[in-house]
Length: 362
Length: 232
Image (cartoon, rainbow over the protein chains, first blue to last red):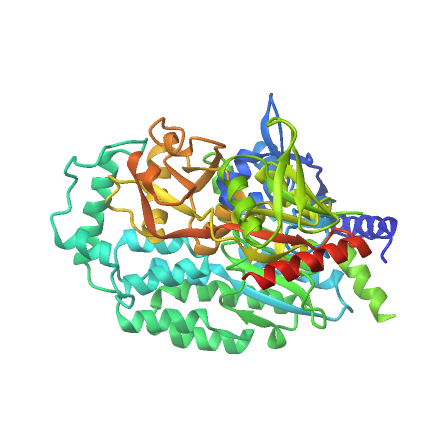
């Protein structure tokens, strides 16, 4: 059993190293405004975070992570560029697995930097790699930005692209939307009827609720418009699927994706950024030849990441969550920044898991 | 010690439970006045009847304060995480049928599937500045169902009664509620989503895995199980 005091000592040590790397220490409140987190993550966050209330401030959540409060603090009074580090408890509701802790320490490092994104990505990754060096971990990397670029450049309507972008982080719904827009899934009977008949609001059903008849009619019209649009072309679809399936070492993955870019030229700028990052990582001594790259990595559990993503996993312990993870979250700063935005990249470490793995080796 | 059986204290659910047990040779009855929550058991020795509100029975089973309990699948699954590990299903009683469903206003002719709901929720949020509200008392079940289906931009608002009326009152845009025939939903100008069946539920006899079973309780449980087996 790992002692709590040992975990705290390790966390403090890691934070000192992050300070030495140029970060300023930040502290954030344990209680976060629930509204902000709910707006960001939707109702799903309730399954992961503890909610509490009082009559004055309404619903609050025990912080499920640091990223949101750190971004908020930076947007309020941060200098530019800025590097931050923090350590402290985060709280996660556990309803399925009693072996997973509902409270644990995280130590983080975040970079808010406008200029060289590739260099900032490489800085964060190599700094984390250095902290976990010697542990039996596998590093996984990915880049959500490539998939987003692929979707943005599809030859289809903006409405369809917006719908797909909205579900980048929900692979199942993304899949079903894609099948629908490609004409692969059968049109449901109710939809067929709605489109084939006049299907306008007749006034026979009573209009109730805050969603008004005009909104219903607007969507019916939109569905009619959409039905006239040709399906997403087969070659684009196959290329997109091939892209999502890329899982290789960085050099081979890059090669495969350049091939795919023949059919999806819109991803070339994102691939150029990947190349720049790879070069920056190499310059920092990262063994990129043997580093794994998965194009779909980070789509399920890392909702706000929209560029580079990474995680370090215990190879022999697939049951454990990642020991370190992070990525780029430019869009999050836009969402929380009230009109302001700044490119940002960062990650967190789990000192408890590091100690657990070290003990297991002894 | 005695084997404790928890039964809903009120209404049709209690009467039908009593009937179900009576057909199998176990007579359950309420003792004392109508206001007193005490009961008697004939047919199995060392067995005790505890009258509880149906909503409390899952918790009492999980805490091991009762050995057996009759309540709906819906309440067990809503209130007990990993319910299979805490309770065992002994028999479905064949009444109290109710489905937990998602329902939207009938005049939403554009919404018939979860796919539609997701798209409508997105547009609604953009137009109104808040997420589409779903009134329910089954927060966990509904949330898990919608997460699994990848529906976004909704929020659950708590409604412990008269849920169907929330849409008309504009405190919610749609509901997730229990229905047996759909009558109440229709009367309130609501319709079911084609693929919006969250859960099928009926009154069920559960055995607690958490309760202590001494010699007396084991003997009573075996007697009862024999009776149930015999008359099936």
